[in-house]
Image 1 (tube, rainbow, N blue to C red):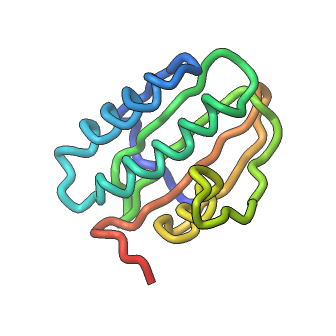
Image 2 (cartoon, rainbow, N blue to C red; image 1 turned 180 degrees about the horizontal axis):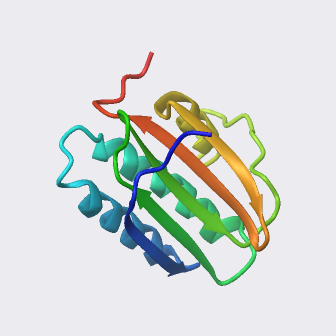
Length: 134
């Protein structure tokens, strides 16, 4: 398991569409003092995971934890109340959804899902510096 830095931001958001925007904004603001963190990648991945929590997770809220950079990486966690792990699907060209796990594969150095007592956590790690897509 990779080490986590201290918590820069933590938020609990109701499972409504407007919460996705709030979670993204708070994460981008949390990483503003760290120029080596790719805030665009953080914003995109939080958007995907928060949207999934709003659309698919059981419960009335989801949580986001943003950890400080540590040893050249940064970790972000999205917790929701649904114990089911995400399932990869094949999105067609014109589909408006179904690409979240693909984006994690492309942008994150590492990601995983952990079951918790109240649902699950999806945790992704980014290397510091701009993300590059192969």
